[in-house]
Image (cartoon, rainbow, N blue to C red; front, side, top):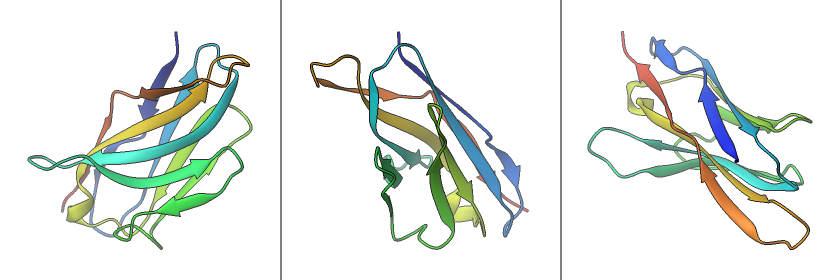
Length: 120
């Protein structure tokens, strides 16, 4: 069974930094793409950043220049968040698009979310 587990959330002051991690566990054939989303209280979930299997990255305008998405050689993705503001407060979710075998069929998985609170 494939699982995505996020960590690294917490309380930080405005202007501070946090690094979120998302580890993929289970038997997979290939990770096609991974991304980060967030959902603030009372608002819809929104896309934050994405990284393809080839390493190409993209960002929402609201975080461009402040957040950096990256992957390592293992099945993990990270979100480095700098210059945080109270508007970044939300539950952050990791999303993975993976194939489980050579058929090429793609599956979508989500993590359980990690709370990020930016407050003085």
